[in-house]
Image 1 (cartoon, rainbow, N blue to C red):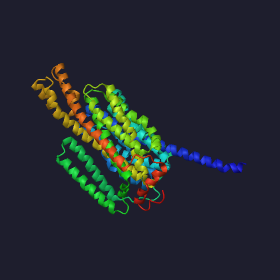
Image 2 (cartoon, rainbow, N blue to C red; image 1 turned 90 degrees about the vertical axis):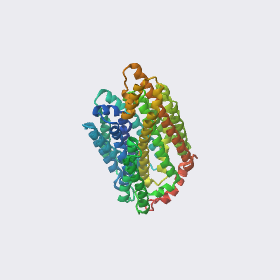
Image 3 (cartoon, rainbow, N blue to C red; image 1 turned 180 degrees about the vertical axis):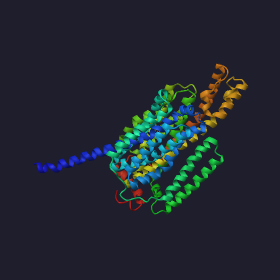
Image 4 (cartoon, rainbow, N blue to C red; image 1 turned 45 degrees about the horizontal axis):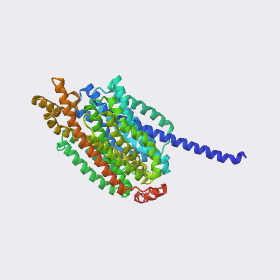
Length: 543
């Protein structure tokens, strides 16, 4: 009797160990991406306290956030290939180590330059974490339904980092020195790194991918040129020599990258993946959606801070209406995708998000917090429905062996969109506020001298001047603030139009290239057949 029961018992024990290993891997992947995204919005909403600590200029403050985004976007593809070649666990732990080192540099920084250095180092770590965490999840979740739920949890963890970052930083900034805003991310990253070193098993692609050094270097140059050009264009003007040169470098680099990858026998990014309509659609939608979302969230955050004069903590709490909805709903999106198909969920989310973004056009300088929260909650609902399906479609449209590369490409476009959003929307906010301000000042009843003083201050300092507009009398200050608030709100409406229209266009592209028809896992597998055929022969081995 015991002899016949032993195999069943052994099989049950093995299945239990596999389930535990899968759950632990998913948990550590989610914690890794949560830590990586804590500083993304958290540091942005903490810029006023950093500005006061170092008397930093507007350009220096912009680089505090962009120093994180630029290396993240530039190195994602490279880190994805490194994980497939040398091991996802190694890249994951290296990413956490670099992220913690960068956070420590920021915590100990004595000037704004060192804060930027620390942010850049943390950005390199984030570049390693994003593709490696998705690849770890894909490896332990061969079943498409389970993988969709795991990716939804991964997306929720990312959103939770975006949500809690400004709240945690706001609490820290109100009671401690600004530098301690970097401690929570450092502590979480360190704990997760130690846990991962003991609990994660090493995995890599069954066929070692080619390192493709020329492709790696050209991709880094092209992406860096694009992001730097947008940053410089938003800061000093789109026709400034530094911006123009950066865009030329990006264009030449992109063309060179395409040529090199098409000729390479082992490309870092097999461009034939884009023969899959689903993958191409997901790639386009990811970049556009993150551009629209992060850009508008940046503009709304500035609106709360400069027009409503909300503190860092208050801004974080108000953004709960957007990010909180995303975090709460994302875990249920995986099950919804399994019921009606990721395409339908994606298109529905983009339409709802587009409507929510356009709803921001209803904002006025005097809009109360409850009304603003209800409007941006609609945007949050749309984002919750859209983000997880984009990632799932991109991963499932290709062979599982290409999960790391697909995840890296997906995350690269996420970061490019995230970097372009604040830069472009920041330029729109500044330009439109300055253009609308003279008209609102003329209608405010201020004297010509006061009007000239306010216009000169805003032109010299930028939109941050709204934080310290003071004239000789309280009445004049109130009139100036009202004119400034109306001008900024006009600019916010333009941002809302750009964001809403972008998301609706993305919905149309998704409907055409991805479709909305409900697909079973078997049908989804059949749909990825063209991508399998297009993938390198050594990888199209039945996975």
